[in-house]
Length: 280
Image (cartoon, rainbow, N blue to C red; front, top):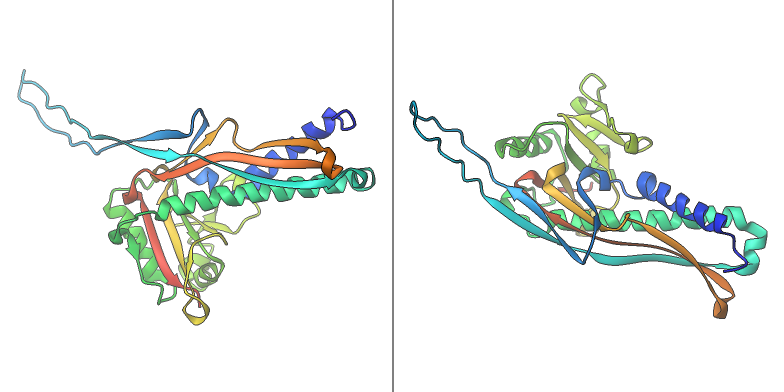
């Protein structure tokens, strides 16, 4: 790599990290994150609910004997590579580098979101699924999901998130309580700036195009999600997304590779609700 400067590599890596953190993954910051994992698996701890009891004067207290359980996330490797022709670098070095950094970061970020969504839906009990994909998203459906979270004593601490598709976002905008600024606030997280997001019912609602879909045509539907941040875990090796540039003589080109080793798992399914609704 004698003919490509270390400054180029450093700048490339920095640009990928910015795109991954701010533009690529919208869900990474909505879940419980464990970074720097060593190995191909890691475990997230789940502690049960405790009950307070009384004691007699000078009597012994009764231990809560909280249940302790572990769920395992399996990390898998994902790559988003592309080639930059060596001669093209002399012509469009800056623009090409930025374009590849953005595309690679977005690709890795979308994969992270895909992993999180799949983990949330995997083996989700029927009791946590609302709708069959035959009705549009409406106020009653939103409130039913909200009530289901409350009934499970999911913390109402500002860390609840609701992820809906583009058609469902349009449906939400038809709901007075969602569209009216008197009822809602912005998705007040720095990493959500520039995205479609609102805080309603003390839940941050976001639009996402990567949700699982069912059916086609007139029967097309989307599996929207409402969950608490602590209900889903994301594990990453090392520092998360990694970037490198290597010259490939056979190609007379530089291979710009973006990669990540990550895995996700549902920690507490009581804190996850799927709202299966028709697109339109």
